[in-house]
Image (cartoon, rainbow, N blue to C red):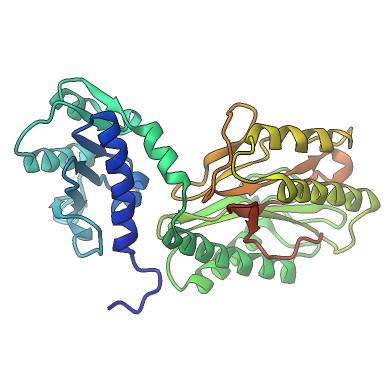
Length: 369
């Protein structure tokens, strides 16, 4: 038995396979083909570098076939048949990763089913042609199923957030007038790697001072400015995403402190009102109305989003979607206020899990400026 608490939970993956199987039965689909790396991991537990092209199928009997690059064949996965493809020739990466992976998959099929479900945006013309061009788009179903986070997924997301906790702690130790954005970036990445004890599968997002966001520059922070840090790491394919804002000289102005207080009120509003069945658009509208009272300071982006095997998933706290919160959602809430007066603004981003009666906040890092 593995001593790694973050090893792939095969039983949990099998549970997800059963949920997808029920959807297939309801839709009359005989075979689902998953070609998006995150979807393959959700179904089987197999994390594969974005450089490669895994594919997984689930048939109506519950049989899972998984095609992996040969380098990953020793991985712990939840699959009944695992086959490899040659991703390199004499240590050189091949150009045609998806093509050779698809051919290996087709080699495993003894017959061509009539009712196939696939991820349209990732399926590709080769598989579409092989299945007669009549492939049901299973993507919306996969995205919906991925919203509900199982205990093994929450464990991975919480572990990714351990790196964020370490990064914010380090940032508060070293941010002061004169610190270079690139130096801070390097030190935060080192803190994340040290905390997790392994390489990261992602590192981003916002590392600019006196700006709403963006990659680090060769620029030194100045007294009076605010440093928005919107940080995320990848831990074995699972993402973290939350934000803190830090006053460079440790002494926020009265206006900056007032804006911080209004943003905290928006977070409290989320915590008080979100529960299963509540409209995500309504949550956005209520936060927007609260922060609109702070004009000329502006809140002009989404209120939040789900996080999991992608940095942005459902539910969408955004007026362009009309989702409802569901038990098991893992989401961010990230209200902000921006203006030149605030040098250039403040964003605070917390993470929550939707429970039967409300939400559980899982980011217990300090919020103060």
